[in-house]
Length: 468
Image 1 (cartoon, rainbow, N blue to C red):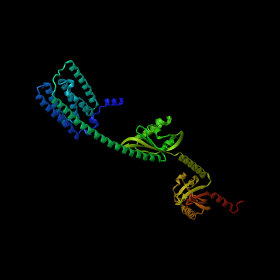
Image 2 (image 1 turned 180 degrees about the vertical axis):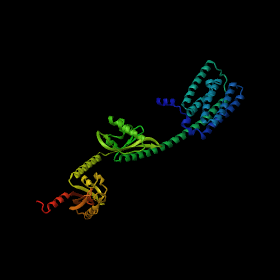
Image 3 (image 1 turned 120 degrees about the vertical axis):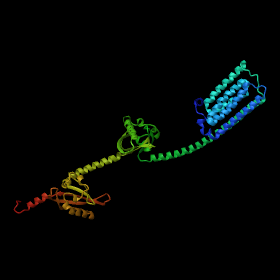
Image 4 (image 1 turned 30 degrees about the vertical axis):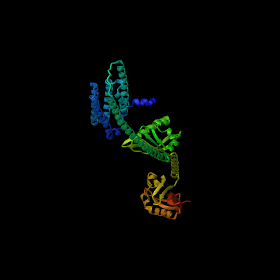
């Protein structure tokens, strides 16, 4: 109750703020009818005052004041609108009622019944401050009337005739009825409007809840961590993978917090700085980084992008995929490749392999030197016509094609080779088909050794006259 009274006292809103659409247009005629009723009552009251021997200048002045107030209200209503006209009627009417009390019958004056009507209009139309202000002023005026009448300071010996009293009562009743109808219509239409809005809000909330359910299901079904942040770096939403990865029990323990609140202290500043830096970037690029997750260091592929609305950054969306296992597999593959390369480069023979188009896929360093290349990677993609032994390319290729077509290896056969220095060498070569996991032939694997010196030594040994 105290809070309600305090809010009521502190409120500065009036009908123009609360119900602007109900105080203009079609609602104006109610006020206009009330003003015409006041003017008509003032005219009738003036005739009655002039027709009675008890008329006084004070009563005539009050009657003229009522008429002027009604005319002034019409003018202000036409030129300024409903609210200014109501202010004029409330304040001007209160002054006229108070003056009438002092010049007629004091606290017994019939016109004083207009006080409650004025308070109702002020409270409903002009706000609580007008109502409370006029309430205090009315109470003070009544006390002052009673004291002055009791002490004889005011002369209230004259009495209104029954017709005048009835006229005053009728005038107050008519104005009260008009304003009551107006307030009832105002309340009903406002109630209907609020009921319609509440119904629309309820439907909208259900739609929002349904959409949020779909979004939550979508986020939780991503196989990687997803999060949303506002422009201050506070978490707006996270998915189940995020909670599982960082070991948080529920989204409520994360939403509304920043990295400074939930991350390890020595890492929180870096995480927050990296996140806020996204707001100044218009693009996103996946990066691989080590992240501390639940007390463990994990390799993650992360990507963060700003969320723009009408060109303004309102937040950020990010994802992180745990690639620790992939990194371990890549390291294992790299280690295996390094070991394979070490073995291939160490063996005392030349090794090479080609695809089905007879283009080189790889070789060892000794083969690359024979081909006149500085590094094995310089051989990749070339064929025999582009290497030092271009003259022997047709014969080499015919052997390779025969192995591919037959699927049978050809082992330990001799061929000639031209070196980068245009020397002729004799090679002992073997070619085998290269197969994939499905046992399809995808190329050839070859190896050879230079037997030129052995050939020359054997020829020398077989020459006539050479000592055995």
